[in-house]
Image (tube, rainbow, N blue to C red; front, side, top):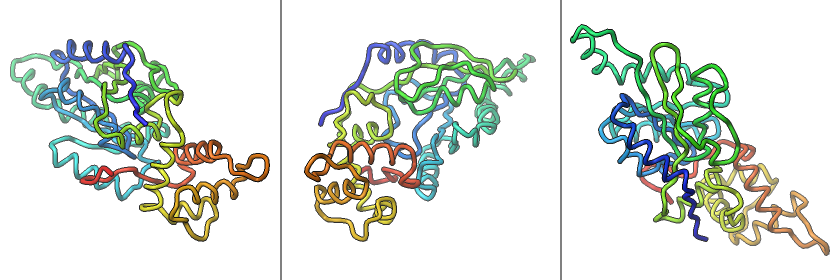
Length: 284
């Protein structure tokens, strides 16, 4: 399966972000804690250039906590300030303005040295679709400003949002990149909800998911679907899960489409447990 999705408004969002970057003080990059590298748009490095960067690992409540700590160390080693958050519950959100202010300290000190009253810090928030930008923004502003949806592509235009008296936040539509060189990246994005479901092949993505979970989270897989052993063959694993979950058609045959959908929903909702689909140094 080849997954590509680059609607026109995303290309426009990139152009607009490039136009605004000159007046931006700090860039906030939001990624999915379950797939921090796969959910990073390589174009954001071009947009952000040498601006101070705050990396937010959102949906940390769904990710494997031990792996998340590895990712924090990884991004810190790249020179980013890093914070894991759960935007839905608000965990970690209050720390964001403090960290943005810390990143902007050189600019603030420069203004003070010139006898100027420091203005509000201008921050640009960037990320791929459905990674939680609107939820983060609404939490920061303490009111509903940004439109929220559980499907990618909800935000379609830029807007400035005031966060208290010390920060102004520029929201932009989520930006994916035109071509995924590694199809494993496409599968991870599909599984975590960054790509519209209408263009996803559930079967292919679920085979990728099952293969990964069998290797890294076999006990959680057995526990969730009440399996004593995990078959080596993916088809047999489908059959075993399908029978346990009652995903059957006429004649007692397993409905593979229903099994794929069950696996999709259980993973995305966290019902399978806290899992990460990639670790630093090994994207497979």
